[in-house]
Image (cartoon, rainbow, N blue to C red):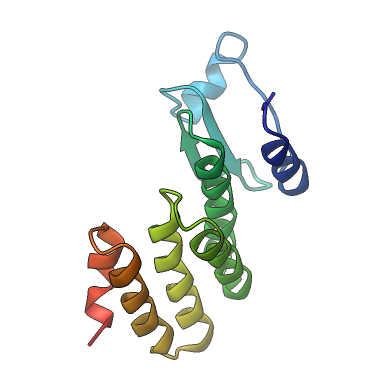
Length: 146
């Protein structure tokens, strides 16, 4: 399905992949409000959507988005240690990916939620201002720089 072995390996290690074609299951496309293909959905065991990736992306950006989805899944489940690790994997491991600023932001939030120590928020504000100064995530974190 995916021409890049890194994508195949990441998906096999982290997901139960299911491919559905719109002509075969239009009801599922309606259920999940899919209006563009490709759309990848990360669902929980109850079939609820937790994250989506819409459209084609270069390999590094696609892998970053999949990792971001897993991180958000862990965050929503209040597993802040796993969430922070996954967010940092994108923030530090894929710094040129479009998802990197968002991942850095949420890594700081995850660290704060795990400890109630505001230090990670301040550090995140500094990091975002230095690495991604024009991103919306740097603006959102700017209130933490205080």
